[in-house]
Image (cartoon, rainbow, N blue to C red; front, top):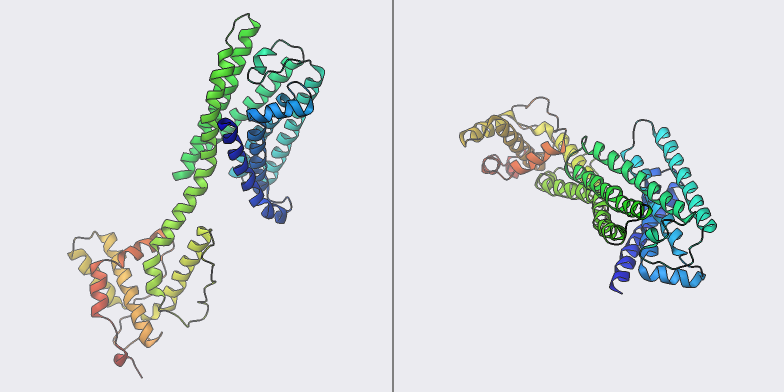
Amino acid sequence: MKANLGFYIAGGLLLLACLLKLPALIRARGRDWLLSSICALLLVGSGVLFTSAPQTIILVNRTTGVSNFSAPLVYCALTGFSAASVVLVLNWRGGSDKGHTRRLSQWIIALYLLVWVLIITLYVLGDAPVERRTDFDVYYSGTPYIREMILLYLLAHGLASYVCSRLCWRWSRDVHGTMRIGLRALALGYLMHYAGYDGAKLVAIGARWTGHDWDFLATGVAPSMGQPSALLVAVGFILPLVGRRSEDAVRYWQLGPLARTLSAVHGAPGLTQLPLPWWTPDFQLRLTQRQTYISDRIVACRTCFDRRTWNEAHAAALDRGAVAQVADIIAEAAMIAVAVDRYRVVGDEPSTGQEPAGPFLPPPTTGDLARLSRALRTRVVKDIRRGRRVRPEQAPT
């Protein structure tokens, strides 16, 4: 019962994930092949888990009244999952020629639909009267037509797993971070599919043909390889998505001090921020909005930049042991903080005696903005900001 429950819970989660993506799939109307590939993989993956559960195998055989009817059903689900995996990896990686990727995906889908037709046809032509729930592959390895059906599904599943493993490993050399880890987990998982699961079953079948009994490879080794390989594949697909969102969330949090400091710069044209509900999960969108928010306000208060503030902060940072590059960041953070304080009191009119900072562009990357945000917490910036703070009575009338 516990084994069945594990299959059904995992399959239900995959099916739920597919249903949650269904509205977006309907809106895309077939134009988004990556989204379509993800939904297909989730749907077929849930089908594999549902049909492979021991209780489902018993139920299907008894309901249809056909011995081993569940065998071609499971084989079709497994080969369908193989095709969906290849199509997803191809569309996930993308390329300059999207038309070529789409045509290649269509050829793979057509090829595996043909495999489905052949599996069903061979089962109908063959004869498998004795129900075998765990050792069907080796028990019928010498039966005409059933033997060819078993070999066809193993070769189709193994070929797709090999292609996915190669694609993921080669792609992992060009990326970094959680994406690389995820792709290598996928490569290892698919390697275990074809070298462990499919390989063990083929060796067991070959042993039967030569008069040896190596059935333990098909009934013991192959299933034991299937579970960890499925886990690696699941981790490989999930980790890049979760990792990217986590990185975006961390960067969003890092920009918090700078965004709060610049919140005093308001009233200028074009500085309206689009409100996002608190439950919006897209941290990439939040990060982009916060970066734009910061950059717009830096530009808005640039007339209040004072070169003397930059020089004073830079010298103070160097005196405290900072290297030149870090001193530059601290000086820019101090100049921005003082400019914000001045802007809040006097607006965008430069004050008397201010030494213009010259052309100043906001840092181009999120990483630079994050360093500026961290620099606001330094003692140098706090001291200079306190000493140069403009009081309302000092504002020009």
